[in-house]
Image (cartoon, rainbow, N blue to C red; front, side):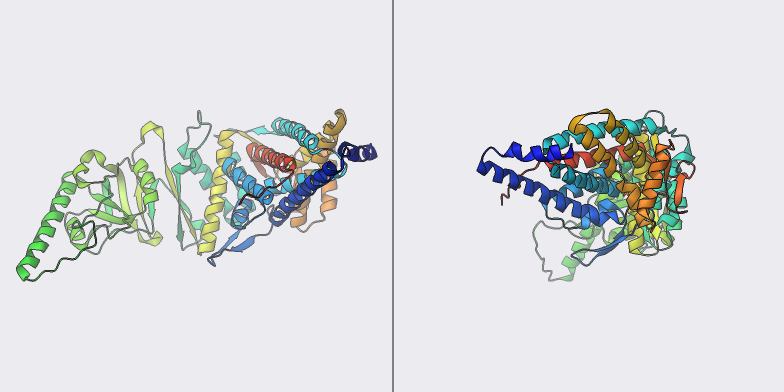
Length: 538
Ligand code: ADP
Ligand code: MG
């Protein structure tokens, strides 16, 4: 059968001379594409799983980052080969769709490409392989669906287990007991458990502060202005209860001309007049602010010049108004939504309706930030929440924030599709096992492709075991054996170095993560297979 396929291959190309060389070129292109894409997959393979390695990446600005996240590693790598870039892209897509499984998707794609190479060598046409892969994918998704366990969003424990699995393979895995419940609580806070089918993670603000340890990470019911402080240079307050918050986008200082110009003053009286005018101008603005009832003033960062001068600060302090300046533009939207304020672009529009409210605004020096808590319920029932990630140095804080984001995404995946599957390669092995059986039920090239797909999936248990320093062949065969005997939830227990029931071990992941990884990897491989020439057009 094998030989038959191989023998028949040349005959399909052998009509004429030039055509044959064209086909060879196409084959070369395909093979080169596969090799390039596989190289990318090999880079991230060693970081799969809880015992996987981390990567230290230095970018062109000499900035260093340590990470275990496939999407982050690939984003930082300057991949130039166009097909290899496709693997970087699927990792990105997985990050957007599911947030986790960004290494797995690339590793699966790499294994599928290797399988395709063998199929192509057998003389099977690329289009037929592509179709066969789709058959395998459809069956794989069916298997995942059939083995997935429904999740109730009120079951906090189960959600935490999912988030913990995602965090267990990160640099900050030892802090999972703090970060996982936080991620669950944050997502549960912003959604309506009964009706929502998605969670908008823009409603969770994640701020980073160096100092303390990751265990000091905390949730804040409201918002937090990181690296900002209440202006105290003129003796203004640092704490305000029953706050009425205004946010201005204009400057609280004397107006300046549009063009760069200088005014030369020759006499003291003229100087006096200018100062008096400036004072009058600022007092008029402050009066408007006071009249509105505002007692906390946030001033958006101005790129042109200082948004507020000492004189204005002095008057604001006298009126007991808490001032925070240089509020970053990208936090304005979040602050507005949380407190219910409307940013004001000119002093004439500064009225009471534009103000937001909060029970407490306080300058928290221990976290170098300003907290706004006790905000009113929002319009349209939307809720927001903030998290302040702490860590002993910038590298840890950055990685903790990325890992926390993954954990949030995992919980969001469960909101999107309320089902989970066993982790630790149990789902991959089960799908592999079922595909193997399926390949015997169908005929023709599809059967070959489904079988190859089934074998390719063993890369996940193989790699998990390999990365944990175990004997991969022994573990893969043992696991396969367990699944053949009907133990659908058996997986690689990398902590105890044996095959265990993953549900009992509480290693579970959202079904969406696995489905998305399989789908994206297959789509990408099918696309790569169909490319038979690369045309450079620059
Ligand atoms: P990805 O970026 O694909 O999420 P990870 O490095 O997070 O890559 O590894 C995920 C893989 O590790 C999944 O197959 C998951 O089932 C497995 N895994 C996670 N935690 C455990 C665990 N405690 N024991 C065994 N396998 C685990
Ligand atoms: Mg992960």
